[in-house]
Image (cartoon, helix red, strand yellow):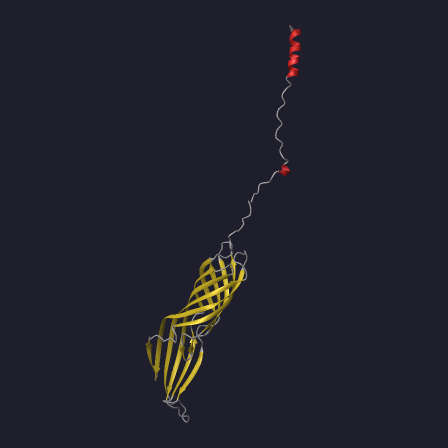
Length: 270
């Protein structure tokens, strides 16, 4: 029996060879496999400008010269004989402030508008000499009347300026600009107190407000400035501006409004 089974098993093993396992799919080398991009593809256009299209903030202004001129003036009238001597002192503050807004029309041109409040004050001393002084007498023979006027007022300035930047607002660095445009000034809140002295007797006080020569005046502004931004997106804008006013609010003998205005302006916008 054993001699019969051995030839059969040998024949079966030759007829059915052992099956080989299927070869695994070949993998490309590790160096040839694409590496994942940790940062992702770069955007085609990234809208993160250095200065936003619309900004709003506040400003503070420091004048180089006061709003009023100081000085003396003398005037003589022949009939009746009258001499008027006036002396003015500028008492107003050099500081002002307000709000500021800017809107970009293009990537380099913008319109900026400010509303600034300034406070002016002057002290005008006026002496009226009536009659004729006799040169042969030691004293002054004329009749003198003295007036001391203390006037305060508020100025509201509205400059509307076109700014041209040196480069696009998208460039991520500080920028400089120059600007020009018209400005409107309006006076409000005029308060006056006038003391009179005649022959050693003082009368206080007449509170009739001083009459301005103009309640509204226009002017032209030119300036130059910088835009600096911190890590929080807050922008500091220092500027220097020159304004030429086409008229004066006050024009009362020695009490003259200054028509040339120089100022240093600091704005903080968001």
